Image 1 (spheres, rainbow over the protein chains, first blue to last red):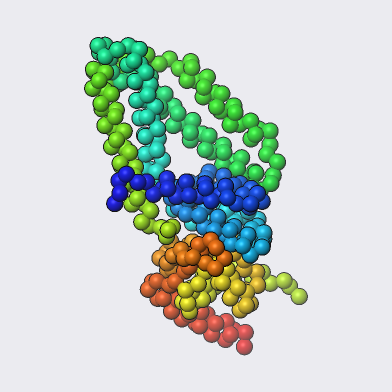
Image 2 (image 1 turned 90 degrees about the vertical axis):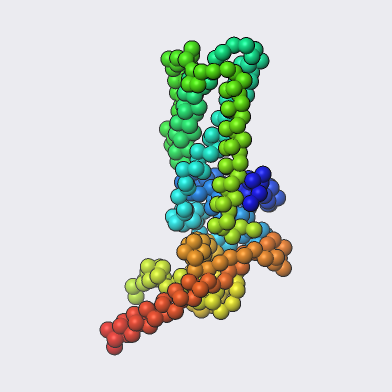
Length: 228
Length: 107
């Protein structure tokens, strides 16, 4: 098993490329279906395999000179709902691993910038406020996903979304930014007090571990599906 | 004449019929739809078929491989697994039992 390669990312990139090669009508139909499917709680790898199959179906329709939606022969939302109905629920690792990697990268960048300004001589540590911001971003991510699902459903059903739904994501985002800015964070306290160089090395080691762990997880996941 | 809603009756039957078609030879989605339509399942389209194929694949009754196709893009070909062969045999047994029972009632 190759720990340096991530089969999930490879499939995502392949699908993105193939989608951009589609004619405009098929692209629009596929794009709106994908946006709707992405809002459901289905295994991410399974979702990419479904996308690959749908792109293949659209390409065949184009080769046969048939409209992709005529080939499916049913309303898009109904088709997508039937695909998701028996979908495999994602394991908690699928959501957590990308978050961990993103936050470790952001934390290393913020920590390094702080290091450049304050130097190596100061004893400090990993601040609490950084951890709280990470956790708040996870909460926002979950809220936004639920709102996007509603909106994507309206688009696919060609229904005009209510004003309330249309501005819901904007209001939630503004409220979250407001909460972060005015949250009474203990700016002086540290989750892990210690030398700045040691903390940086710990963060980097965690990132490397998370990177290889992530690749291992997705490579194991890909063995369950026929996608090549 | 009352318009009989076939869809409920079809739901249980379609999977068994799809598996039997795949059992005859390795095949792909559009070919399966064509064969089903030839046999009388005129309402079946690829949109109906694809979710069923996904479900059968997850259950381990069929296996899929991507192969080059004459039309250009790689195509997913399906064949029956050992579990699928057992399922088809069991389905046909149950179908015969049900058919005999219903025919007995209507005679």
